[in-house]
Amino acid sequence: AGLKRHLTAGEISAQVLLGRDLLEPNESLGNVVLMGMGEPLHNYDATARAIRLLTHPAGLGLSPRRITLSTVGLPDGLRRLGEDFGGQIGLAISLHSANDVTRSALMPVNRRHPVGELLEALRHYPAPPGRPITIEVALIRGQNDGLADARQLAKALRGLRVKINLIPMNPIEGSSFGPPANAQIRAFQDVLRDAGYLCFLRRRRGDDVAAACGQLVRRDVPG
Image 1 (cartoon, rainbow, N blue to C red):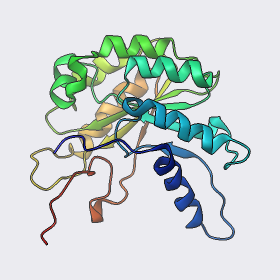
Image 2 (image 1 turned 120 degrees about the vertical axis):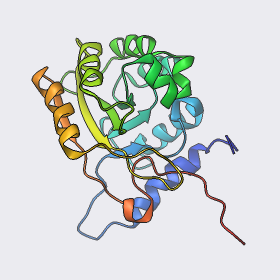
Image 3 (image 1 turned 180 degrees about the vertical axis):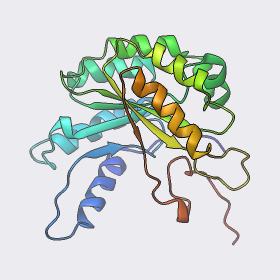
Image 4 (image 1 turned 135 degrees about the vertical axis):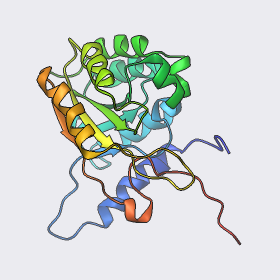
């Protein structure tokens, strides 16, 4: 259990190359999201090297603006990313709650970097005009799906250029967490839209093979 080791820059880049090789002849590589590989800002040096490999003319020559980094939001890492790449790398922030008590229960990292510290770092991130920061909220029944949670989120994000993705919690074997009812999800979304935010409900993909959002867990395979 716990961290075994970080991925190398080569391993991070290789995932993109392997994905490219799976494309059909009439398809091309679009956007790249650094996600599902551990916390990239906790592995900053390798992540930054991978970005440089992917954007270098001798590499894939991708535009940095086609790369999005998904993170829990480590403030020092956000500062370095902004300084090193001029804000060209898109951000997807795994926020999940604007309430410190709730977020700390769901994400222990919040005890070291509470919501206010994270949001302050986002206010200083040099994102290009017209490119909002994506806020990810996995809605968990009875945990962070109340209308009071939605109102607190709307208030906390005020003044930030963001779009919000709502992701119903995917079931995980052995976990009591699950998705809210559809009516509750829509009510949560309505609060955010009424507050003036772009707010989208993400479709589930891959849950039939336990590969959907939030289902990346370690399993012990017999034999």
